[in-house]
Image 1 (cartoon, rainbow, N blue to C red):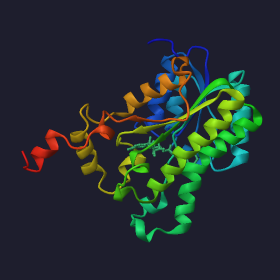
Image 2: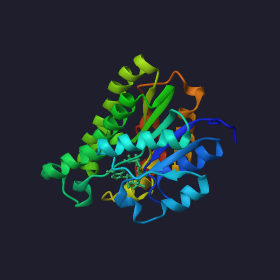
Image 3: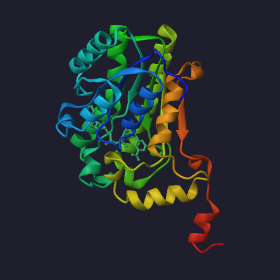
Image 4: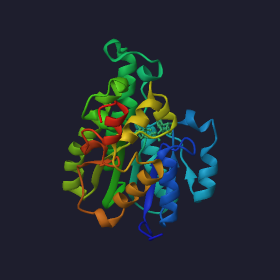
Length: 270
Ligand SMILES: NC(=O)c1ccc[n+]([C@@H]2O[C@H](COP(=O)([O-])OP(=O)(O)OC[C@H]3O[C@@H](n4cnc5c(N)ncnc54)[C@H](O)[C@@H]3O)[C@@H](O)[C@H]2O)c1
């Protein structure tokens, strides 16, 4: 390990179980010397798996619904008390679409569900940043990362309303990144991750086939949750202190590849 986060204090959202990308980020952040609090929606706590992660990483858990500004205010206030100072890094690893869960086709999207998806998966990011800024809870040079997916930029039919929602998330990183950067040098980026076998990922229709397809396209293959966590750690570290307002692909080269030999062979074209 490199002690990349030695002395840094963080907030990590979204660790549901061992497959969660946030779970791996927490493990790596601990290895790299950070102290942090874990948070998730109160309903997700019922499974109780997060307790094992808290024990392993010597961290406390603060339940917070990321759509609720009061909860988020409590989160930042308590996190600073527990950790003994301002926050240096925040991971937003939150995503949920009711339209996807209910397998509703994109053109028939239910708008109440759509609004819920926007609130949970995109506006929650704005709220996390707005509350932090109001409380002046993030230290100068602090780093905030949210996780996104390629469907924000190119069409993937099975990703339905989450495609539009992720586009909004990526835009919030740019817009807020400007304001927070100017005032406090806080940097804000999104990481666009390969398909990953997690609860949120596997809930998407046809995920298994698409996972294999992406793996066959990307020269390095799909990036797994652990390597995504490594990348997030670099973004939380001072080594990337001038990187902000970016959407950064972490996908084994998938986003820059038109077609691969493997896929051509599978189609019988070569
Ligand atoms: N799995 C993939 O293929 C993939 C690919 C690219 C990006 N991502 C993104 O990575 C992030 C993490 O997802 P994951 O794949 O680790 O799955 P996951 O299901 O393990 O994590 C999603 C988390 O969001 C939390 N959450 C939902 N509603 C919430 C709320 N109201 N308040 C607070 N937390 C709430 C859940 O409890 C859960 O912990 C998401 O933003 C997801 O869209 C995933």
